[in-house]
Image (cartoon, rainbow, N blue to C red; front, top):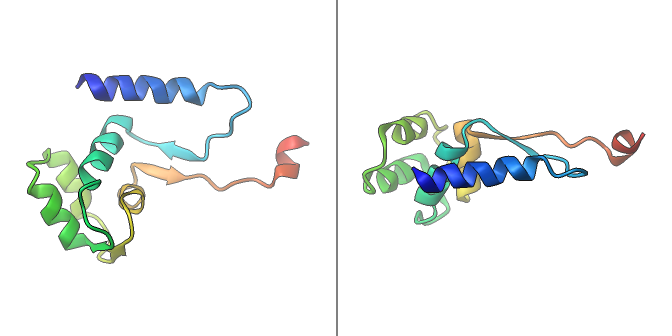
Length: 102
């Protein structure tokens, strides 16, 4: 997957920009990007079953469909919430500015 490799390279380069604090921890860039691209066509808010049906209709890879099966059965407001709920992306807790600068 050439596009995924390029996206991962760019993301890794951005992680190395001096002075920038990374707010998220991405476990698997190619899968997170693939999932986000698939989820952009879902009509939100959507529940777990609606998301899974939409993704399966796109002939998605089994590893992505498997991630969605593990989702909590609730309403999701956007693709970012879904990707985070799969565990592929985790938001880091932000430290107060005064602890960063000291």
